[in-house]
Structure formats: C-alpha cells, structure tokens
Image (cartoon, rainbow, N blue to C red; front, side, top):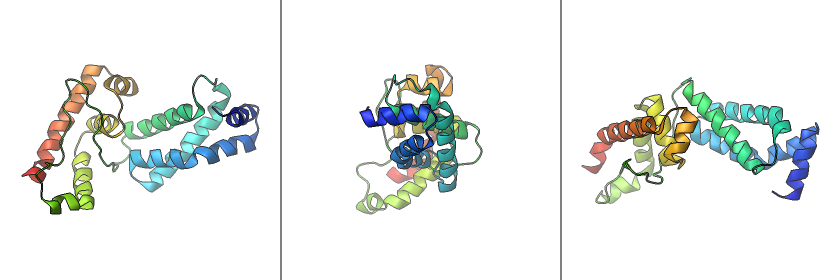
Length: 189
C-alpha cells in the first residue's frame, strides 16, 4: 500500500471526510464496474455502488491494514452484490466467460470450434442468447456458475460466500452446466 493511501485511510479513520472522498475517487470506477458486472443493470449497479461506500464509510474505523485497502473494499463490494442477488429482488443480466477448471466439475463449452464464421462473428447475438440461458437457472445455480466461471472463485471460496458445503456448490455447478448445455445445444448443432 502506498504511504499516501495509508495516510488517507488514517485520516478517514479519524473523521476526515475529504480523505475518505479521495479514497472513493480512487476506487469509484472499479467498484461501479464490478457492481455492474454482477447485476447487469446500470440503475441497480449505482444503488449497489452507494451501498458499498456507505458500508465502507461506516466500517473504515475497523480497517486494520491486514490487507490492501482495495481488497477490503472489493470484499465489501462482493458481499453487497451477493446480498442483492440472494434476495432475488429482480432478474439480472450477466455475461459469461469460462474460468479455471476445478476437479470433478465440468467446464461448459458454449461454442463448438467447428461453428461457422457467421455464428462466431455474431458476438452480440450470442451474448444475448447466453444471457437469456443464464436467466433460466435457479438463483443459486446462476450465482454459483457466475462466481466460478466468470469471476474465477474456487469451490471453497464460493461455499464460504454462499454459506454451504463444497458438495452443494459442486451440485449447483453440475446442474447449471447441464441446464445451460440443454438451452445452448442448438449453437453447436
């Protein structure tokens, strides 16, 4: 952590609003981007953004410099987004990018390499199709799939976030993959 950032944090912990505003300015676009990626709706992302910085403002006195400030702030962001999704307040849109493979969990193949150039070139259409397929998953399947394959979390980390055991996470991933393969099977045919 840069000495200037440490001083901003110390000042913010002592009630210096301007120091906190500088920290917000430094990380605001990253927090908003992460929130938007989770919920896929700009208005919801802005609401989450506000909630993150309200929680950060209330909790900055408890920041103990055991991690980077950015790590602490992004953990708050993830928790706020996860809480938003777990409430299932409304359907959201998330794009998919395959992540790391975990043993015993199959990675979904969204496009066959033998697909025609027209199919491969229609990225926006494919993105729309995938987004709609994700919307058909149960909230827990969708959250698990996105955390694993989009954000790259390990099974153990997802289990901690979702407060369940690793076997349950693997079951959600298996079911999500199976359901997505059914929905997307026409792409590779």
